[in-house]
Length: 250
Image (cartoon, rainbow, N blue to C red; front, side):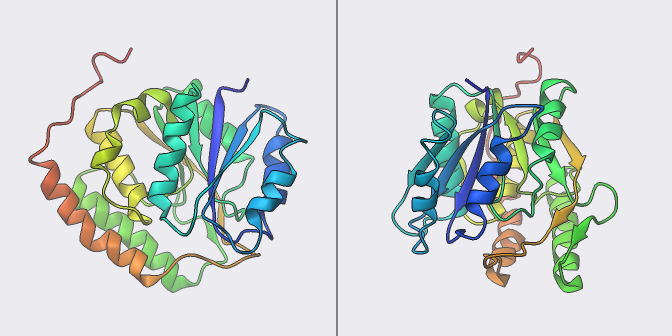
């Protein structure tokens, strides 16, 4: 059994999901298992996944939920599933090839060999490495991360990144009941919690390529949630104790 699980939330990804599954399953340097969390996609995404499960027996899994329940709840469900099934390295990744599956190995090595406990596929660690985004969206994302750094004190350049590897202990330590954001700000909150607990976060440079097939789920309201919620998150953290694990995790 692989010690790595990649969690991919899906909603209407029929154009991408089979190609993504086959790409991950044929990576040569490291074996990864896949858990698809599908929110009742009306386009048949779930059926495509299930049609491949016999071919990738004991490596491909699916959880089907009824309706769009939010990115954060999908990942939390996946995290709990991963912990229950004893995975040591748990990954977040999009279905639309904006994250290159080949970079899974680099994130894994950052955690398994290079001392990271949270490895982040970063669009902004070496300038801006984003392809096919309009300049307005690039600027919004870049300065949103700068704003998050200013408010929280984290040094992470790409705070909203959704391509992440967590070591098992990180997810065992974070109290999922305290995670309040369910949209894309969920990504900020998870990194902030890991940082507050004293885990080592490391950014790995990636090239982010906007989807070429399917429909983007991004909207202005998603950025508003992040912008206005971060200050609230920071204030609440002042009145909450985070158990530091730095001295006991070795």
